[in-house]
Length: 418
Image (tube, rainbow, N blue to C red; front, side, top):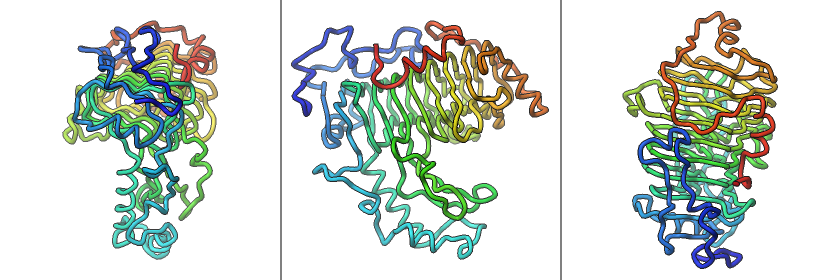
């Protein structure tokens, strides 16, 4: 399939070492290298190599997610999910059904009318759910097994898409800017916290019940639609974004490398729930995060449940509303080494969320060595353990943390493949 500019990756092959669609995860590069490793669609036959520049072309190239045929899909330029099959722009009003409007929803569920002891129910809540379902069906894309999804140039982007890697094995996503996966129909929940909260439901990327996944050199943010620009309703921020990059529902063998994630609140959730029996996540959720640039983020970079998660050589830059960086969740076994944190108090780097222990060594805070566990315990009067009970073996070069504040921002994100 030729792209909009006539480039066809089948007719005009690049030399193999420089063709990103044929590149595979390097040996030992994190948990995604375990077992069979991660090769994505690198074995695709010429007829299964596609270049796409519209939503319709992208959906056609992805095809049935149950089809395991190796595929390479090159994204050319920016593709906006909020467009019709003919390319016309869509707004939130185009997804609304059954009489839903935000004004009517606000009037119906104002705490002065509805109260604060029960979640919304009734015709308008059902209309909100139906409107959300219509939007989800349009903007969500499913990436199946043995697929490489890669940007063909520095400007390759997916706007407003919810990329779902669900029930898949052997997937690579590289060199893409994935931005503003916003929910037109967040739910008001007056029982969420002391004052209630608005909850959105779309992630930029969700890795769900999947194995051997490599996300590398991508950029994730909210684009020109930050939550900071949203109004307050019922005294609470109108939240239209959920996670930037979540790994959930017993996914396993995942490597997240050289990505740039910025200006967002809830970033990366690893594991859905403390209830192990729900998804069978114990012994899974093995994830490596290395050389990622976490900039101006609120929390969950990452928040971990259950998994043996190796966090090394990431660079964290504070700014904006900030809660914590690494969440030590229920059953988690986090091994955090040789990371650098700037503009973040050492005592706030960790948050204990029903977890009990973390290995944290050789980390820097504002260019100085910091014992993150000791800093947390001193600030909170707790006894968080300092031994996660395992030692990583799957990793490439671990750089000294002193170089990360230059190395990572200059190398992470879309458009910086080497």
